[in-house]
Image (cartoon, rainbow, N blue to C red; front, side, top):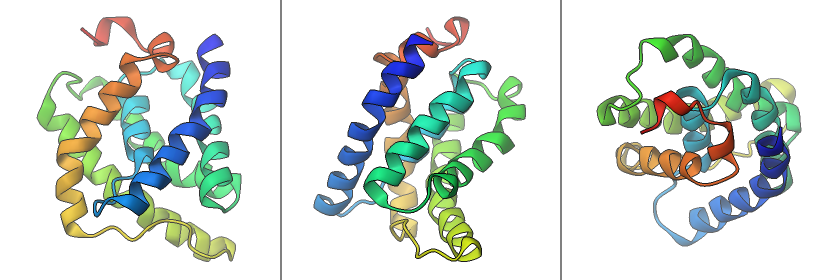
Length: 162
């Protein structure tokens, strides 16, 4: 529970860093994809929803849009990939890279589609194919960094991280 409380204080700063990196670098790598990858592969199941709520609140503060929009845009890919957790090899870099790239391409498109359904303006940055290739490299590294340091280090499944 301490990990969740700490995440509520840290998540807005991570989203602020995400916004700054998106405006200052040519690559559009969504840190939400790294957070989703970390949730799917390494975080204990009972703590996924509270951490996801903290991320959705932080993204709504910095990116705009409703909390429900960000909760759905991040929660649907996590909910779809979570049953495959048992068959995914958490130590395989290729699995992490493919999951991270697919999440980084899926989340902005899903966010735009859900914003259209809800009737809100689009809040996600456009992502190109080159950004998907960059996500192959950067999203697994960012996800590993998220679970290496507190507060997500306190929420991880211990036997899966070595």
